Image (cartoon, rainbow, N blue to C red; front, side, top):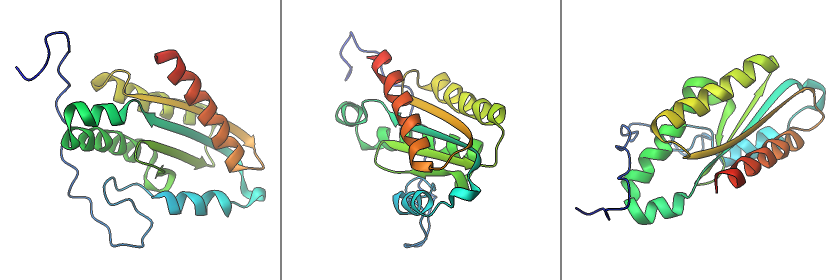
Length: 168
């Protein structure tokens, strides 16, 4: 009755992730259990170019998070963020997963075959889209011998933006 007739009610809120706790200063985002923005900056700024072989990058954005928050509230949005985070942790692990802003996430994985990285990215997107169709836009790329993690992530972000423009 709270929903207008022409709107589909949102899917149920995913399980609570409030059990995730980490002491301050450890480089872990307290809400998600992913590495935080400071860890991301350290990983990209301090990357040794000589050690950047077989690197994959994925950039993820939660579509319309501010609007979802206005329409459904903080608890619902926290559940969505938790769903994205849980799937990143399960597929890529904390060592490769970063929350860089409220609605943006990055995966940076070194030493992985292209086929395996693409398979993991597709699995992540499929798992999210099964429960929340069009919730995320994601782009990824892989390079056998890159000189810059920042360039790789920038390319993944461009691919994410292209996907996002196709959703609109």
